Length: 229
Ligand SMILES: *Cc1c(COP(=O)(O)O)cnc(C)c1O
Image (cartoon, rainbow, N blue to C red):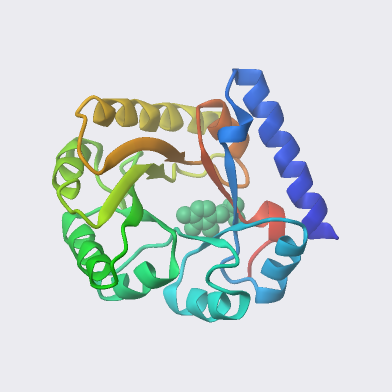
């Protein structure tokens, strides 16, 4: 019951944020981030009609996805991906949000080719240049986009970022704006296998601001499933 009412509240907040800023709320997908939460909680969200889930750790995700059903939901990989796990990411996930290197893209492409899949991916930008976070640097992202678009078994459908945590989510706004600007810059290149459809940005504490700035995929964990240990 709690999960259901949390989902409802977040959907309401997404609508309000979209309305306030003239965004189209129907373009925003709420991804329920279920990392380190048991499959029963995913099932509870599914029973409430929810279908998009985000996971960070390949091994943990595979176990849960096998239980729930690969095709029963839309699975988003949002964690740091190592090339040697690309094979599993490709077979288990509909969208990989965290491509930040050409080498990783090449391996995802190779694995996708093997199983005849066009893997949808986002390019992750380290938007505040934090040394502790993955993601491509802003000054590298155009070059990465130009190289990744040559991989025929990938489709790049947008960008992802994770700004620093601020007590006041308003402080994250400049970073969301920045990601949108980078997306526009890439769009002008008219690259093959690339459409700047998605901005994956916003978490439990700052998704409202992200939606105001044009997020189409918001990744919310704690506010749906409660705190993680
Ligand atoms: C854990 C995680 C989230 C969700 O964070 P909450 O603060 O629990 O909403 C979103 N995005 C990424 C990349 C994460 O690792």
